[in-house]
Image (cartoon, rainbow, N blue to C red; front, side):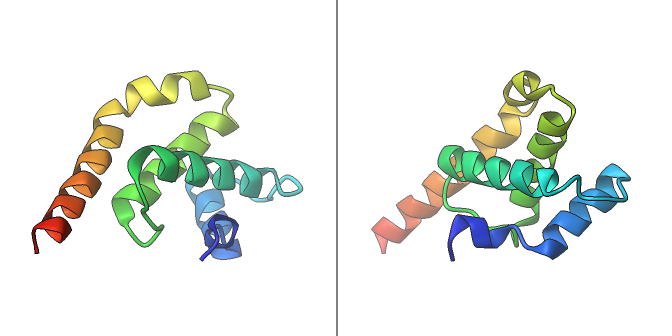
Length: 98
């Protein structure tokens, strides 16, 4: 599934509820979520939004972007980003061993 297809209206709605917003700001939230999803897949690996840990990280990055504080996201969530990268790398190693 293409990256842009992963941010469904339901994902936007879930993010809006989490942020206590009652409107989409003419697609701004969807653009923020798509950028966060793409950036974190590039950094962490080929995760989908069904993985709750990855989805949480996408929402957190989106929250930082929405609040114009994106420069603080990587430092504040470095452990979570590294953990996802490590899990994906270990998953690849176990596939190669079989």
